[in-house]
Length: 489
Ligand code: ADQ
Image (tube, rainbow, N blue to C red; front, side, top):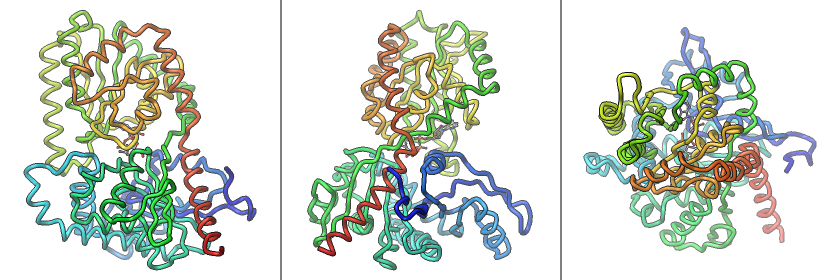
């Protein structure tokens, strides 16, 4: 669908997310250096035709002086970004506290860290108040920059209170909200003390989107069970007003990966890796180092596979790339040492003087190195305990043009609903099942591999990030038109 062409002008879009897609480093009193991070959302929106998008969000740095703030606003404006300034206390309570310590684990069915449970319960109210204050600060910046006819697209669990703040200020504003994580079963969600207030706020939006139908269904159930509202096939109705609720599965910019594979630097990298691991099958895991990604479970399953398949011990290597995130949180520090401990034990147990079965890197890889790794991989292991979608599985498939490797995929990742027919689906908690799937993947006949790969490749290359963004924004426009038509009738 084309957007905005009716008026012969581009549809203006304000994209609001907790973090701007830039990393900002202060170079002097009034100078900043900025680097755009080419994440999924950025490339998704770059590919959408007829849209003129601006970003609103936190730049990830604390800037308390006016000179610094003014300079940052100016520098960001060139990148079509507008900053929301949050001070350290708000970041601590809103971002580290309410978002990452409460909503993130709850939405991924993990509950709260046991030792923090009471402390979190005690701090809950002040963190929720900070969350609302922060959301209002985002709303204030949106209101300053909003022009009539703009569409406002709010992203993720950080900004669930934003739709209400925006609509309270201007009920005609077109507001959409999209959740990148799962929305849990209403039985889990209803334990949240602020459950009703957050649901009501999200319902203030005109369109609410999720990666899968299951998440959308859970959200509608939460609204019916907790708020007593009526769920319809279209969404949720409250006193004659409909909030559209639907699934919009995200994708990737698959062409960007295909183009990268043709670059001489990437080809050279592929060649080096192929030589480095000659004679061994390459298995790959790429994850942020987060509890939801199931990294310890994955490595234990690999150990079980080595235990039970002695003939494979010197013929396979697992490369686990884990980008550290939220490194100041004790729970994440514990996870890092746990993973190191397991990897060390397995390498000690099955390694030789010349080779180890697991290479574990605690860092991010640049885009080209990542593409090369995906390309030389025989089996990708995505064993998230829960994951909204999981783009790593898509990226692997996009880079497997020649190799036609196998994807082992958790049934608890949103991607299982789109790549389920091509992947080997597993329950990541069952390490015997994962170990058996590794054996199945490594021994899979080439016809079966090709058939599975064809299915996944067709999906990944036809359901792109651009389609996702375009569909959401155009549906948001249509929703409003429908609502206006109804009021006129
Ligand atoms: P994430 O939890 O961050 O995203 P994912 O969808 O896998 O998970 O995306 C991660 C991105 O970071 C990918 O583009 C990947 O290439 C990159 N990345 C991960 N590890 C990396 C590494 N070691 N080095 C370099 N790059 C790395 C959230 C939700 C997901 C949802 C997305 C998009 O948790 O479920 O799919 O948003 O909606």
